[in-house]
Image (cartoon, rainbow, N blue to C red):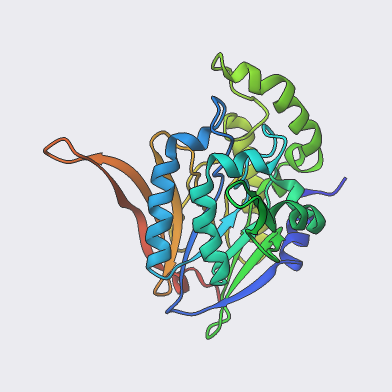
Length: 299
């Protein structure tokens, strides 16, 4: 059985390299867990927040990197039901893809996307009942285990991966975990019983996963690393271990993400706020940063 170190080493070695500079704008989201709009679809509660945020980033010229677990393919048997439930979201993501501004990483809940043939078969087109024909969706899209954002002037790297490489159960035995979720934890979710195998719901597992990831980062010259998986946002100070986590899109009434803009990194939240006259609106809140990426460079 491979260790978390070897899994992270491989993800880094085989990562797709994307060059950027101080004029680049990048938004990182993960753990959307887009489902079928049923009782078990955690994304449905924040769908409007997510859609509004993504529209903002598209209009502002951002590239979108999704760091795994975008689609909930443990609780749902196929992508079709998810697409039909959240078609407006996928049509917006399609615009990013057509502009070459969509970059995808697979996580444990959408680990089937590591198979290029599965991706080609299920994501290239979709059936449009209005025309009775298959319509292009994400033509030629590629999913990756890791992505390296490499600054074209300083050569500084930002490594993106889902983070379940440090979670042996949800990486090596993901099919067994998927089976348990489908037959056991999804029905029990109706009664409010959470899946104890996921680090997002199990604090002890969360700490272990973070500790293994931090150890790998320190062994790799404090490489700036952004993950998801645990759903817990993390934003270190310069000089600390460069371990970032963008959180998730299934927080109660809010989503969190990480922005890279003007050569700096920020942790942000989009949430519903109430104005003085009682009107509800979706607002962006800066949680941490912006901190220049160069402040995390080691000698």
